[in-house]
Image (cartoon, rainbow, N blue to C red; front, side, top):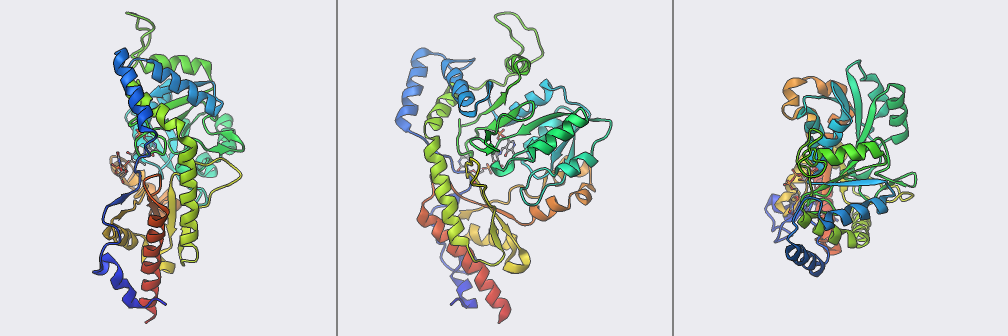
Length: 397
Ligand code: T4K
């Protein structure tokens, strides 16, 4: 039985940290090093380091086949990939997005002087609430960007109906959703195009990198020009473009990561159920459920912390975990609308975002991936249990 004295076992209250080394959210998964190094050697021997090399071409083909999508365009990172699709779809004026997302979704619009209109989320899935979307459409609205946050699919069908009804473009930021499905179809097949991030912190990484996938031939052609300065053959620029190319070394890492994708997902799944078991019955701590009828990548361990029930609250729990060297994160606190420049542009945006505001105060993301063991997870769960139950008892005394 815990007593309030148990709190003193926690480093935050004066005890010894349970971990000597820091455990991070977003620790990269590293596939087979020998395969990676062999690929890098090949690349050096070939002296072909970028500009649509063989590794990029192979990577694009493998991704397209895996997702069952017609075209995959490898890009230098997810943010540039978003910017390219936004531009290729000719979005302008206002575009509706969730505020509960990584800042890149909003910046990719604002960077091109398009106004992100922040929409509230469905508290169950943490994704865009489509019924709210409709109420935000104005004559200036040109599109909607859904974000499959944590790999949880958006309300794809309802968003599609709304977009069609109002003649809006629909695209998805699928940065978190590689390897996930919606109603049996792989994410990557919805809207005009979807964008993945293969940043180092994603369960499948290319160091830095991203990809655009689409089933639209014309859009594919346009994006391929745009990511390569608009070049169509030597000396022939036919379109406005930028440099969005993925390098060969990134594609080498991508191919190596992709070989291990089944193992990465299996480890993430094991970790997810380990957390589920370890966190069961802690009052006020809930793990975001996963829909086992679909394919998932389990790459984020997302907790919601109820301040009243835990007594300890999310922010104190974060400090307690950090003191133990568990570097948990508050993604996506405080919401894009509370970050600059949006906070200055729309100081009252929060009034229309009650669920986003609430969730921003509750979410805590824990470490997972191949860098963490089941034993580590057990210890993290014990820390949380000790903090919540100890604090509850302290209040009862
Ligand atoms: N849309 C969405 C919905 C996204 O989540 C993201 C990226 C994007 C768009 C844009 O895609 P990219 O342009 O990045 O491809 C991190 C990542 O940098 C970012 O890619 C990711 N989302 C976001 C959710 O997480 P920060 O600001 O949290 O990064 P940072 O430096 O604090 O590192 C995160 C954690 O990873 C730390 O715990 C340390 C650990 N880490 C990181 C790196 C790079 C490592 O252990 N090793 C490493 O090499 O954004």
